[in-house]
View 1 (cartoon, rainbow, N blue to C red):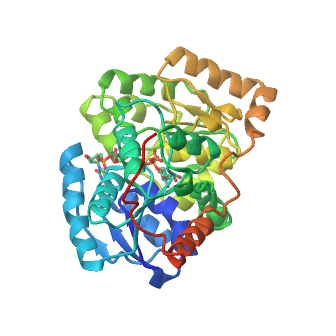
View 2: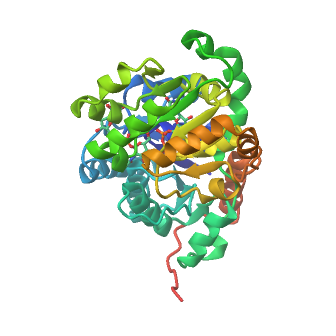
View 3: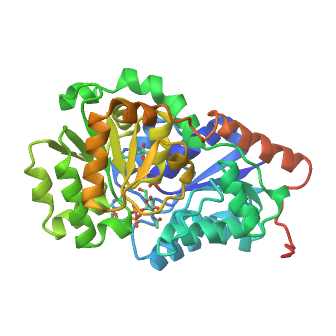
Length: 377
Ligand code: UD1
Ligand code: UDP
């Protein structure tokens, strides 16, 4: 079996690392669209995680939705026509994923979608469109949970195409936790003490591209009564500066603004945090894996399992509500412990191995191919 692993952003590198480890080097080529290109959004992860140099770097970079997706499709198509892999592997819901899946299936190369079946049911998010389209052109679907599988079944995707494997984020956390603990000096460098600070991240387009929404996030961050570490995504840094909000954070005594961090630093930072506030998908999952309470700055989540088991609370951008929850988290020991003891719904950390196994078996059985027909009942 020879797969083309296509990735382009920070979370895809982190979450595909376990699948790459489970595959032999000769079983895949690595195609990087470079949707993310800054050192601290890209190369640092390849280096820290010890991943191979990509076989193709496609310099797609930034752009509007259609420009970025279109450019990525054109460049991926060229690679796939040259390499003719048996299967394409994509992970998650970025424009790179959509481009990889569309380019692949139209060349009759089957698509394996890791983290299939997630739905926020909010079609204003670019990621929701990417998820839906990618799932519906994929031939092998790897939802992380039974709930995600149910979403796929409800949309008419045949059960035989679906393999629940867990989320590779758990593999990534377990595989790197110890190393992060040893290698990272982040707590010492930032003068932080175990469980005495909060971590914040925000980068969702719907949250940061509107001044009103971003202002609410700034207000929430400023109201947190313990030290806050906030590694700022480049999209958000640009918006904070353009909207004249950067100074409100920079000037606050309690807040430490940093560049985006490498995985070892960020993992250690999350692990020792009192709480995490985020609009990130991956960080909601990592928080529950590390048993750190998570407050999600969104009205919907495609990871409802985290809320159902009690480790994550959705507060949207309701400033007063967010303040109340943070205050409760910091003062009500029982509430905090309940959040910390929420069971991890994303599997046992062997998702990468299962993905490799399923693909190898399908190949052996001659079943790794585009399904020509799909009957809709
Ligand atoms: C993308 C994904 C999002 C994912 C996130 C992970 C889509 C539609 N969105 O969002 O689902 O959660 O990655 O972080 O695919 N920029 C830089 N340097 C970089 C990368 C981006 O400066 O290395 C800036 C550029 O101004 C760019 C903006 O960030 O226009 C947004 O980047 P883009 O890749 O379009 O989307 P993300 O917000 O990163
Ligand atoms: N991450 C990191 N450094 C940071 C912020 C995030 O290493 O400064 C990692 C985080 O641990 C997670 C992934 O990046 O594995 C999440 O990426 P992001 O929030 O950008 O995207 P999303 O998961 O929302 O698609």
